Length: 586
Image (spheres, rainbow, N blue to C red):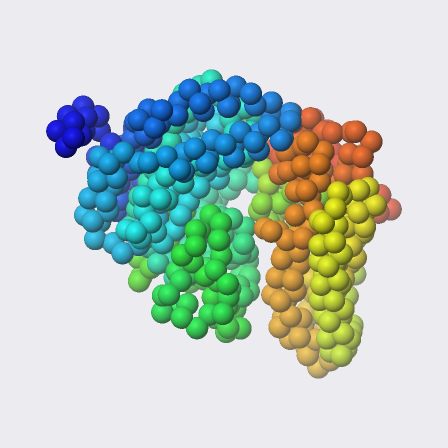
């Protein structure tokens, strides 16, 4: 038996350390594994690790006799019928997770784990079709942080199975990749217990200005930022001359850390399960901790040099994930920015001097949320430019002046009462939706849920810092206004969490949309990309096509005109609107 495995191992390479991988090895190590190897060889500070090569996964499928069974299940998938995607995913993942890992693969993984001399590792999927010119698999597959020797084999097998999540199967069909040989490698990398972490784009992904980069930073493990669970600080850095030209420091009220670490011993926050696995917990940050910038300006510029070094090495714009521990920056991932247009317009999606003023930028945004926010929360003369899941909000300067007084004219007593009212509205809303989830969701339920979120938005506007931002605080210098500003600062993060728990992650609103998608035989993840009106239209059989939703994810504009009438522009209409908007803004 041992001789058999020795012969097989000699014939087929199963594992390779980062030091022996480069950018040309994406076919065996996936985009992620090849990139980590390339950066290691280029002298970029990358935590050490190894890749369980795609061949190991293929060997596993062959020895478990799963290939024909998987092909048969996939051949029955109709991407227009979401239940067939869900069913195929459930069957395939169960087969992969329950099959026995070949002993030679298990032995090599454990042997290489020992060589890392690490108590904890990150285990990440790395598809061999990842990050190509037409397919960006980033975010489709699974990651498990703070994995130990005891569960590393199990998590490698889970990464293999994640090649067949509903989202990944749908992505495969949407990109016309069904029938192609897509495999998956698994990166096993020494875990950085980051004090601060984040992402960086070596070219501004929204404006497409090649002389600007963006760095986003938050406390704790980076998965919280990547998955949208935490709103990070953000910095815009000009490359020539090298300087920070814009920064937005947010208050962070929690950080994702390893369970059982000294930083999490006193937390009562429940374990966060998901992309991060079960080994991590949320740690509540004090007011003082959460108010500090995650990075100093000097550290931002130090990281900027590292980002530029990576971009220069590759010769193309990069999307980078980084971590900071004990005074050192580490790069945990780098891939091409796949959302840039082939030609970089000089003034894309940015207004520098105009009648409008930039208010807000956020990632991982969807149409339904922005549609409700625009109509029921923002004043007239507002523009939302949404590109590849990033929204930039603009509002006319005249309108913004009027907004500046909203949160400052109330008394502290009124502010406390408003906070209590908002908390009660959300709590009552969660109870109502819980009842809806016990039955088939009807038209009346959807209308009620949307109306509920409208009400939450209108109440949230009372607390939003955009309504009393620094530009206009100076106009309110009396003690009454100062006390109220302090109160709003204290409540800000509690309010954001209250609303976030309702609309993001496993929040009540998302669970309702998921159920609605299942009932309508639509992809559950698509429900968030419908407008309010389109959700109602579902009950008349008006299902949006996968192609339309795919285009919407790339670019659309929401415009609330001076008479507060809403307009949605997509594809060529969106491009025309943006061109005129920019032209009239110069």
